[in-house]
Image 1 (cartoon, rainbow, N blue to C red):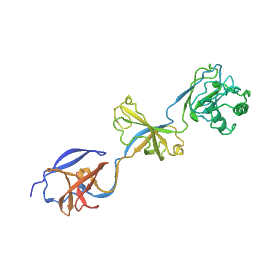
Image 2 (image 1 turned 30 degrees about the horizontal axis):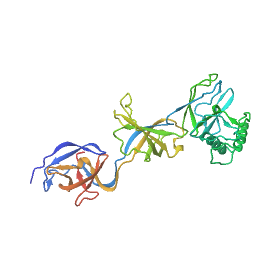
Image 3 (image 1 turned 120 degrees about the vertical axis):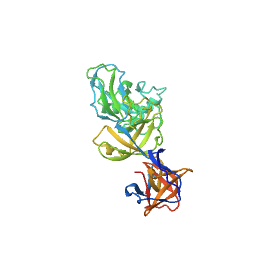
Image 4 (image 1 turned 90 degrees about the vertical axis):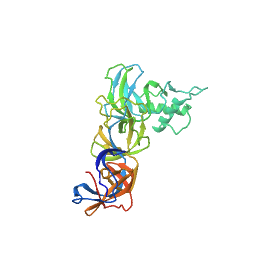
Length: 356
């Protein structure tokens, strides 16, 4: 019988970090002099393996943008921080006149109203006005971008509702067009300041999770992927990766980004599937579980139970009473310090020798 030679070396495995295994000549049967040490055996388990990984993100409202005014006059009213401003709401006041929020993608770049008899105004800015007047209940639904007498009348009715003179003409400085509702994140001006300045910092109204990660470790992090979230208020929920940046940035000055690296960083933005789950907390660290490949119902042992055979391949040392037998195995997925194995006669519950 050949003598068993045991040498501890290091094996790098995907998803499992560094783990120890033993290297042996292959004996037909190895006899334990005093029987196997119970503290150094483990049962083969049938379970699920996953290469999902946990990284740390930050709860918040995403990036902030700045609201400016190009009008003349004096700032006479500003909303408070954390206020939500929706379509038709007053965003701020200049000379005590309201500046209103409309939704859309094209800002007003000219006065809208009082169509000329021979050539009515047309264009995307006209469409924005009509769509918002429709949404606010002042104009029947329309799909054209042409200014009509009905539109002008609707403008007058809307102006009355704002306690403005019903001129039928919208000055572009009295409307701010944004993609949707906003949350006031910061106040950048003071009452009495000239109007033509930076007024407000605003964000989206829904909370998101910003997830920084090493640019060379993007496996599983892409738009549309579902992730698990452990929020700072102790609640668990799920989210969806909405976008992933493509411009890498330097790691934080302290050299300790969320996953412990010091490499250039990308950032994923994650929307919460249930906004209510974050109630009571606006910011804080979030544990994000990014999914990876998985295997269901496979035989699993700790990586430390693997024996590297001199002729190549791996085996496990199966305990039979006071003796052990080497059984050749094929390895599958490595994850969390465990490895999937297949081999002749192997089944859940059998004990195998391990180094820890």
